[in-house]
Length: 110
Image (cartoon, rainbow, N blue to C red; front, top):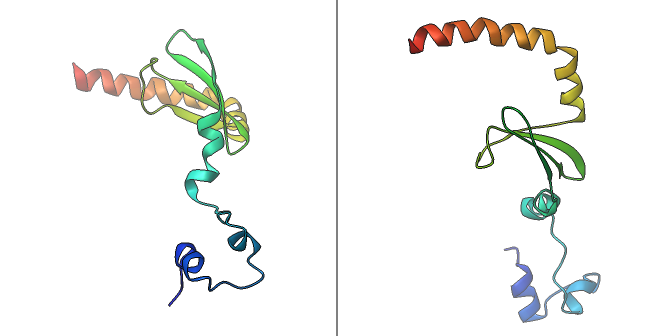
């Protein structure tokens, strides 16, 4: 049965190559929480846009742009450099898609 760090530390049944356990330091982990810490520690700069809030931040060390409907929006639209380029390259297609489906949305809500 595999031993956890705590049981190895308590029983002193660890290999000599595990120097971090011998010195009492916890071993480094690569948990999902630790990998995403840069996202939480980033201080985004916010500017008011005409239809919402635009926030620039960082995710895993890379710049991202967050688009929020308002300052209290819980689920912003986030994208990075590559997707921003795709959006700019296909901006006319996106505009026509929105215009086409806005007519359908208006007829459904009326």
